[in-house]
Length: 213
Image (cartoon, rainbow, N blue to C red; front, side, top):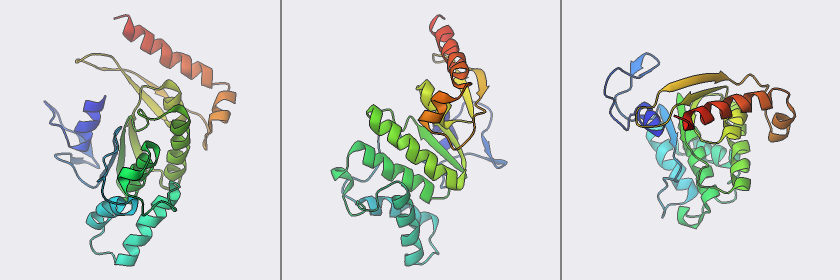
């Protein structure tokens, strides 16, 4: 799954075929694809603000300094870090680092957002909190996102479509499940929805079948 994401990001070579984004072949990494990794990829000695600004300066070279500052502050505020903009990345908790990563990815205004198990290293409460943050920030842009996760409940909460893949080095797309649940979503609404347990059972049944092969 992560290999597929890396290929879409332009960080890994493909053996055959092509990957197209807006009818253009993906040949290498570019600012049209924002990426949030499982392990926060921040410059540790730079502040939260400076880490986001690095990307913004590259994507908006002709914007004024104030315009770039407004973009950085807008997204740091959206992820709840308005009071921590001057803290160095090395001083932040893992949850706060991922907030910076999410802010940086959205600040680049990408065509596609790629998330590789972004909450996999976090405790349950922080994970739930950041899922809410991600949905809130996404709701204002609604850009296309592709996320790798092994968490069934997370997939149902966040996705419109779940693409299930088989195990092993020769993994294949096994099943595609449409998540036709109303938005905005919350964990409470999800648990109360009559289709939630049916969708969850379909996902778990596929995973169990994969484990038996």
